[in-house]
Amino acid sequence: MWTGDQNTYEFNPGEFLVINPADPARVQYSSDCEKLIVTLPVDVVEAMSCEANDSRGDKRVRFLRPVQTLACVDGLAGLLALMCEESENATCSPEIQRQYSQILVRKLLTQLETNVLERQTHEPSVAFERIKKYILDHLYDDLSPETVAFASNVSLRKMYALFKLHAKESPRSFIQRLKFDRVRADLLNARTSDSVTEIATRYGFSHLSRFSAAYRARYGELPSHTLSRSR
Image 1: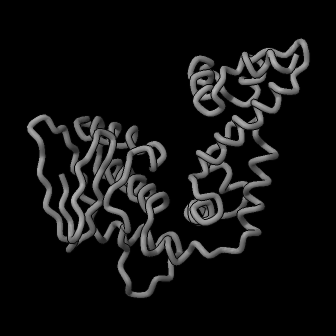
Image 2 (image 1 turned 90 degrees about the vertical axis):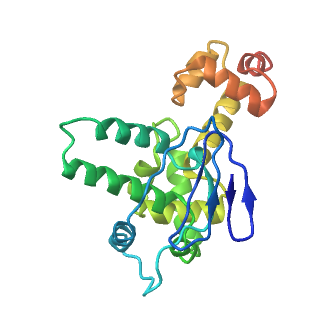
């Protein structure tokens, strides 16, 4: 349980707490709590933010929301697990540790809300429309946020800011939603020879059991039922 300046929150598995320097915080742990505490040196965070060409003057970077979920940062759980594993490896040099630290800080700065990010969200919608068009034109491809940002000629940080402002969801969720919608459209307009497997794999859904469960959660029916209504 975390108690901040004016709030108290009881954490569930898969959630984490972000505390800025000098933030008032009191944390209590249950007897069965398994926790991982990561300390981010202020100078590293500041340096990574400056590397992103941020013009914030003398104002220091602050994370705006203390309570977060692992799912809100792409690949965070896997990265932390890898860093823990590497830390016990005798061949993990200080240089490798430094690179891992930079990756972690860059992910957090890019995908979590900060005072810096808040000032960067008011971007012209033309950039978002360009990103959206690229995604729609490449739904058959294996699209990652990094790939889309590079192809759209925007920084990853700016792209997340644009999605926060215009789509109210992360790029990964946005891409996934459009892929599912396109699959459903293809199922409803399928030819006699088309199958669920063929249409799903066309958009990169290779684990068909997971795809079917996710499809049913979204649309209230199995993809096979959608396909049968087109015939």
